[in-house]
Amino acid sequence: MGAAKLLLTDHLASGAKNVPTSYIRPISDRPNLSVVHTSDVSIPLIDLQGLHGPNHSDVIKQIAHACQFHEAVVNKMLRIAREFFRQPEEERLKSYSDDPSRTTRLSTSFNVKTEQFSSWRDFLRLHCYPLHHYINEWPSNPPSFREDVGEYCTNMRGLVLRLLEAISESLGLKPDHIAKSLGKHGQHMALNYYPPCPQPQLTYGLPAHTDPNLITVLLQDDVPGLQVLSNGNWVAINPIPNTFTVNIGDQIQVLSNDRYKSVLHRAVVNSKEERISVPTFYCPSPEAMIEPAMDLVRKHHPPVYRSFAYSEYYHKFWDTGLATQSCLDIFKLGLHS
Ligand code: OGA
Ligand code: NI
Image 1 (cartoon, rainbow, N blue to C red):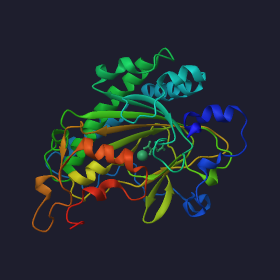
Image 2 (cartoon, rainbow, N blue to C red; image 1 turned 90 degrees about the vertical axis):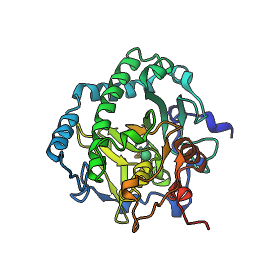
Image 3 (cartoon, protein in one colour; image 1 turned 30 degrees about the vertical axis):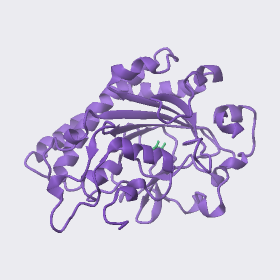
């Protein structure tokens, strides 16, 4: 496909009024923007249901502390993301690659090599833990990019580790159970850039998917776009200043043996404003073996998933493409015999 390398920003710079045909989905697969609900009290900001155990109040305090993420760090992150995408094409393209295994790369849509429909998004994806392994391959422009983004990553890791303790405890596991199940740990992030779209009803910023990693902590600017599926309805999770949205990913579903479900979500676009989001994807390291926690596997709850190396799961995710059917099904026990 000759157009694969065309980034949205450049396409739009040429004054396009229509989305190119590759973005146009069949009528049955469009966002149906008029039937989306707005966020209400049934969508908690942090869902740590069942948080219990001997250190309950301690964990609560830890979370409160962790959530006082420095406002300046967050603002710098959003500013540098905006500045990055406003740079001239030749500067941005220094990081371009359509190979999902690259640890630092700019690309567009989701996976231009395998997908049937394009998505209205450009993104810069970065591996960020251990930071010193990767920071030198990150973009060197804008000049404060590495410093600002590096500071954000380090803070974010602290927050995630506390969340993982709380989630472990809420499952009745030892606080360090999840952290100890992730091998050497991994942390990736994306700087998502959704330009205004002339026909937002025809396409997505990102179609419905669950995140393949453990847990995702999403920072969004002040433009709505994120939606989650809740009781069969798409619900808009509109941005609230100085908050993060925490999404449970597929690996928490596996470790919890289906007690916690990864959340189906999508991003829609709009015709008026650009939108920036910055998800942190916390994950196992590639060689880590993932399986349901032994303590959650009992007579009445046999293991739902076979054990697998995280790298196997991750490759399946990028190959399968974003589909409503999450790739968890591929790893389920007892479905295929
Ligand atoms: C993602 C994602 C949502 C958003 O990058 O996996 O779901 O609001 N992003 O950008
Ligand atoms: Ni996602």
